[in-house]
Image (cartoon, rainbow, N blue to C red; front, top):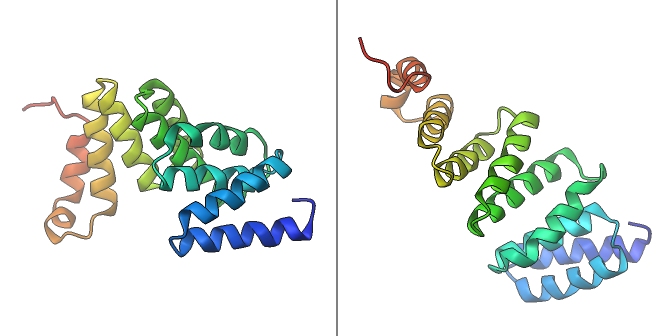
Length: 166
């Protein structure tokens, strides 16, 4: 962002979103996106507020703009990949969702949320086996449930060969 007032306005818009004042945040972010079209953080926050408001189709170009450059923090890049992948999925653009979420998982392999959203998108493409395997791997790696923890190794093992028999 090139102006101090822009930084302050962006911080204010984020605060409005966090306070649940979504329409006010959207108005401010749309103005910032018009004034700073190359600012990846502004684009990401603008995409996010559109998602919050259920305006997924309007969020897509902002997510794409945010991810086009190298200016996002690592945390925001992860969030933008998850947000765009999830948004593509909700819009029925399943192949794009899988592609975007695979990029996210490749960059952030330990992120269970990215992997869970990838599993949902895989399910939507008919890749049920891979979707189930992915979910079981996430479950085995992250669950705090005592029963799952007890059988973690078995779940992880069988996730790799769901059709295997003895």
